[in-house]
Structure formats: C-alpha cells, structure tokens
Image 1 (cartoon, rainbow, N blue to C red):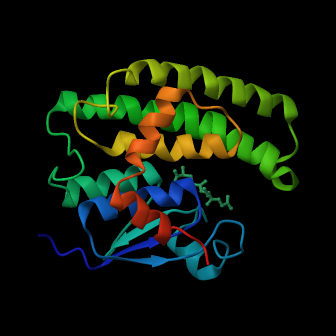
Image 2: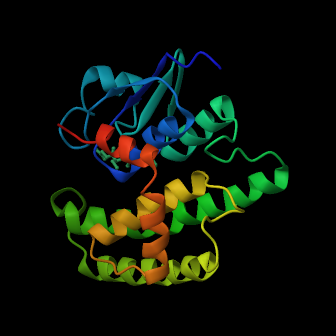
Length: 212
Ligand SMILES: N[C@@H](CCC(=O)N[C@@H](CS)C(=O)NCC(=O)O)C(=O)O
C-alpha cells in the first residue's frame, strides 16, 4: 500500500468537508484533520490564507502536494490510493466520462446552483444579502433535478453500474444537505440515501467531520 501518512485535511462541519474524509475512510487511509470551520475566523488566519488563498474548506495536503476543491481532492485520493475494493476507481475513458457527467451534474446543479444559493441568501444574509426570490427558485430548481436523479435510480442501488463510487458520496452529501433545508426527498431517494448511510465508513466519517 502507498505511504499515505502525510495526508492532512483542513475543515470540518459541512457537507463539503465530509466528502474527502468519507473517501479516506472508504480507502482505509491514515490521515490527520485540522478541524477548522468556515466563518469561525479559522479560515482567515495568516497561516491558513498562505496555505489556501481561497480561505475555504476543505483543503488537502499530501506531503508537499496541496489541493483545494472537494471534487479535485476526492478524485486525487481515489486515483492515487484507490484500488476499487470499496470505492469504484473508473478505468476506461468512458467510465471516467460517466463519472464526470454525474459529478458535474450533482456539483453544478445541486450543490452550487441550488443548495449553496440557499445557504448564501437564506443562511448568511448578513454576508451575501437576503434574496427570497432566488432562494425559492433555487429550491424549485433542486426539486426538478432531484426528480431526474430519482428516475435514474429506479431499480439501482448506486448511480453508476453496480458499484458504490464517488458520485454516490457527492449525491448523499447533497441529499442530506437538501433535507436539512426542508426540501422533500422522493421515497426512492430516501431509500437510496438510507441504505448508503448504513456504511461503517460513512458513520466513521460523520464522527470525524463533527466540529467540537
Ligand atoms: N468549491 C469548493 C467550495 C468550498 C466552500 O465554499 N466551502 C465553504 C464551506 S462549505 C467555506 O469554506 N466557506 C467559508 C467562507 O466562504 O468564508 C469545494 O467544493 O471545495
């Protein structure tokens, strides 16, 4: 197995910080967590700003290699340390493209365009401004795309093929986030989420992602 002892994650407490921790748990990696939270002032320190000028979490260090963005961090961990034992490691260009398709869709349409709009304009009005019309539209938009995903998942346990993979990690973190915002989940999506969240690796990651 590769030497993974130099892996450190920065950031806990959000759906996005959960993703790399969950991937690391699935891969059985040894890693350290710096449990900083967004908007606690901890992302604004001189030390952290030098490390990640975006002042956002999650952030990953693997020795000298440094990486931001939850999608990029997770993909890096899987392509570097994965062996498809518990988490699919796409091999062919077509498998990779299908994973890209779902990751782009979930990240672009659910995470950033819907849930983060609600977070910004409902949860953090003092920073981003109150925008009830945008929040309502984001909620309706999320529900439309959840319908598309619900239809795709009929008769399947996972988004891609027969194997649990990164797209499922991104989807489950968004489904939890959506439910926290009062967006009703279709019965099929609830069943899918409830089955995946039985994984020991998810439970371990949830504990590690808690802010003290
Ligand atoms: N595209 C980034 C988004 C990172 C992001 O916005 N993180 C939020 C927490 S979920 C954050 O650090 N916010 C702190 C801030 O904006 O000050 C990713 O997926 O990693």
